[in-house]
Length: 295
Image 1 (cartoon, helix red, strand yellow):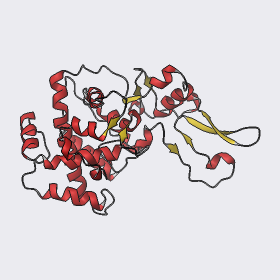
Image 2 (image 1 turned 180 degrees about the vertical axis):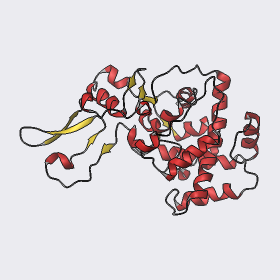
Image 3 (image 1 turned 90 degrees about the horizontal axis):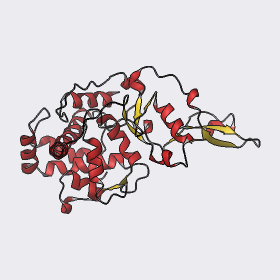
Image 4 (image 1 turned 180 degrees about the horizontal axis):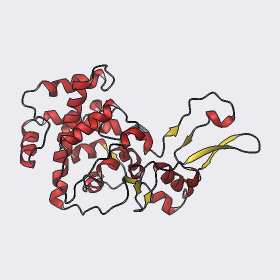
């Protein structure tokens, strides 16, 4: 819960704020429904990751109690009492507590909850529609304004600064050493102690661009750190659509250029973003891309 509060503080600081025509409201009740991982930039990956298996920590009383099924599937036993995973019936999903549980799919359809979404996706496995269906963003589907070219060029300025300040905030609050590893703390300490660091807050795009030019080295590690936070299932040096979901899903309702940005990052259009492509998207020079920084 503490890290979720950090996330809200980061958002409240408007380090990643963008001019929009309508006010975006971050609904706090999500914090009571979704556990958050160690990265406040994103929602817990288990909520959106189609490949993560759900583990039930219970004693094996029947074959299903220790059998793991991914999101959208439930365990059943066949005639020989062998456990197997089958698609969940969406009607068996718990009723959502409120609109904050709704999510929007890439089919532009609002699903009552992540349970309903993944159950539906499972039923479409093996079909063209199912292959293209992914979780798009948190909340009911709504009109997302087109991303203009000048807005797309501004996106990495704000997000890059946001990532840096998220790391600094984690460093400041890491009292029990559970938010950052020792290696990460060592890297962030240099940024935290640098008196030239641009403090968190709402800054003009010109100032953000100038700070990146003058204090370029402060941004190298935060960009690598975020890549490592996302590259988890599996850890292979590439980000898939599923791995990007924990970062994309909360951002899209607030940053309408999010989808365009990640699409642009995939320079070779192979549906995977490599570390080199990711770093290039944030303006990190080729010679400064270092796999050893992805901790």
